[in-house]
Image (cartoon, rainbow, N blue to C red; front, side, top):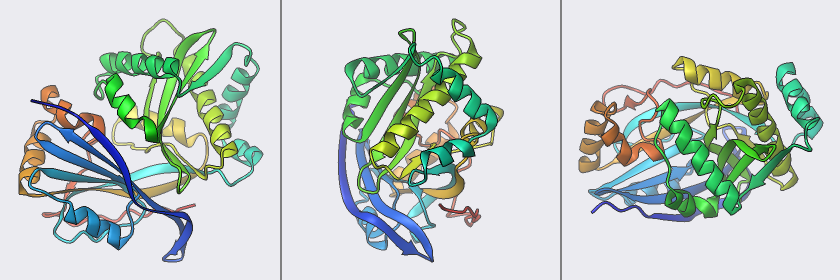
Length: 319
C-alpha cells in the first residue's frame, strides 16, 4: 500500500548570522520527512554544521534516503554521500532599502511592475487562505498538464506543507493568473521559491501580460516579506542547462540580487542507492517519476555520482 505522510521538525537553528571562512551566513536547518512508497525521504534545507551532518548520517536506515538541499557550503559527508549537484540561485538581501532593491532591477522589470501598479484597483494578491490554496493547485496542475516538466500536486501534499510554506496567487479582474509557493524558515528569516505556475500556456490570456503579473507578484512578495522582517528572498534556482530553464533564469536575474552557488546531496544506504540508481536510469518514465518527482529528486539533470567522480567546485559569492 502506497501512502504519504509529512512530518516537519527542526534539528538546529540560531537567530542570527555567524562567520564561516570570513563570510556572513545565516545558519539553521529545516527538515521534512516523507513516506514515499517503500522509502522514507528526509529533506534537509540549509545544512552546514558538522553536528547536523552527523545527525543526518546517523538517521540513515536501509530504506531511508536523505536529500540535503542547498547547503551554503560544501559538506564533508565522507562515504555517505552518493550524488551531488551544484545549485546556482539568486538571493535578494531584504535588509537593503526597498527603493535600492527596486532600482537594482532591470529597466524592463521595473516598467512591467509599474504598469501593473497603475492598474492596482484591478489586481489583487491572496495569501494562505482557502481560495489561494485551491486556485494555486488548479494553476499548478493545469500548467503541469500542458508543460509536462514536473508532477502534479494534491491538496493533501500542500496541506501537509502548510506549517512551513506560504501560498500566493495573483488575480486580475478576479481571475487567477499566476501563483507561487515559498518555503519559509522563520528562524533564519529566509524564504525560497518552491513552486511557480501560471496560465500563460492556456492561450486564453496574453502570455506577456501574464509575465507582467508574475513580476508584480514577486515584487509584492518582496515588499511583504521585507515588512515582516525576513532577510533573504531566494528565487529558487537559476539553472541554464536547457532553453526553457535559461529563460526562467533570465526572468529571475532581471530582479538583480546576488548570484550564489549552493550544494545539494543525496545520501542513502545500499537499498536506497540501488533504488535511486534504477530510477535515474529510468527517469524518462513518468510512472517512475511519481515516486520522487514532487520533491525534486532528479527533476533536473546535473547530478554527479561522487563515488566515481570528484565534485567540481563552482564558486559563487554570498551576500
